[in-house]
Length: 399
Image (cartoon, rainbow, N blue to C red):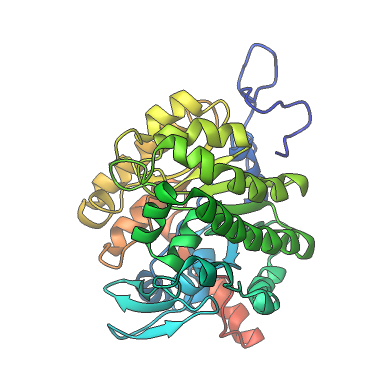
């Protein structure tokens, strides 16, 4: 973890040993703002990194009169990030019609179901152990996957840059094998499971190493959804035995490169957060407070000395269905509680912002973070001018 001079991980950021808060700069760049949050120091405003569902992004792009790929920049996102692993196949390829499909480099077939792509065919679902062990990861497509980072090269020196190498272990394996098969084999054939999860991690490690060499990253984004809405999908002991050692290898790539480590896991993962901290995690996402044990303010109190958080804005009730005033109030209270020690928080939703979210609610959420509607439209106007000059139509970043 990269800390500011004189600041030790786990200690509150301050100007003196007594813990008096440091002064907040008048204006900060996105890079400075996110670094301040990760160091648990005050910033000029809370940093923002919002993910928009493609339908939401398309609507905002129309409203702002800009290409969809620039919506995050116009809205005031402080992180510029893209995918280089299988999450690109899930989220980066957009289908228009219900039921449309594509098959990715891994052999996984995806189908548009509602707002999201879901797996229609697991390539290793029906094979035996011998054939399973013969499966070849798409190493021949590594250059194509890493080329997804090319839009990041256009990010300015003031940008905070991330690369997503997830899913890393468990989630990558079940996308290949099928969830039921993997959970059963975790209990009945640990050697086979350990070998295959290790191979999934090997591929993530290889991507991470090259990404760290080829792009001036600020953090390495990792992740595995190992939890459901009520609990972990396996016992904490099984996670520690079969998943944690392989995930640690992915974390270590970023640590060795001097990067912050971000980790994404939806659901109720409270029993393993302490493990993640011990592994060197710097920021946890997305903090789905509706799940047991995942109240954002309680997590802040328990782990806030050692861990920063990103997420927490409810995308099930508050954001799509609350009033603008309720969204503004709820977001303000979340920011206040999560930055009570001066920093340690990046404002984000608990999932992608859904298409049914009213415009006024999105703007109210940003207003609570100190990003005005006028500022957003002014930034969009600058983006339009830039795109007209450069003839930009393509994708700027994956997320």
